[in-house]
Image 1 (tube, rainbow, N blue to C red):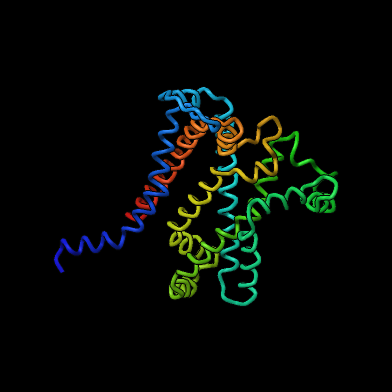
Image 2: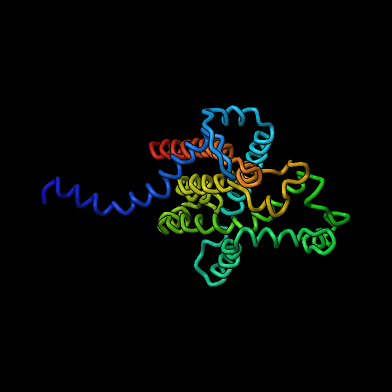
Length: 292
């Protein structure tokens, strides 16, 4: 088969993928950028304003407050998910029936919708009838039931973090288990014969060999946290005084409550750029580690 014909055959094979990406990624992205340059109302009416929306975003204190809150949420939640996920993976990386059952139990919350999970935890956090408050009181951790969602933004933040950790930690655990089980048994057995303790094997063998996977799961977790919306919309509704509004929450509010699609598109692009920068950092760290 000639080289030219091989290229056309290859193009034919990837054609459907190119069409899919063009229709559902490239076109919406171009449309988003175009909308960001206009005063575009959901109710109708479009007026070109150039970089006006970007100037407005720069001067928008609520957007910067929401972005700051989102970053803080991400910086707190991501290490919690990574540490707990990896520890659970280490404990459940075996092949016995009990270990497999434990993995399944930890993973179950992952398949529950985030909306359903948030509603469940709103009930669990209820001051009067919530089981979470009752548990803390019975264990003498707190003297009386707490109002998790209301006057205290930090308490609401931690309430959401607890609920998301319960729901998402199983996803990271499964990925980490795959990475741990991919390490050849001979390597671990050799370390045992050399007298390495369990935590020495974890520190010097398992974690270094899972370095790229850890970075990937960290990136996925961080992106998910940066795009947080449903949990705060359902659990805190932005209270108190919009202190628990995330970036996506503010984008939604502008686009579908205030009907300012152009400004919402601008905020979406800014958030997308932040996520792309984070992804680029992850790729750089992975490549640097591969060269070492």
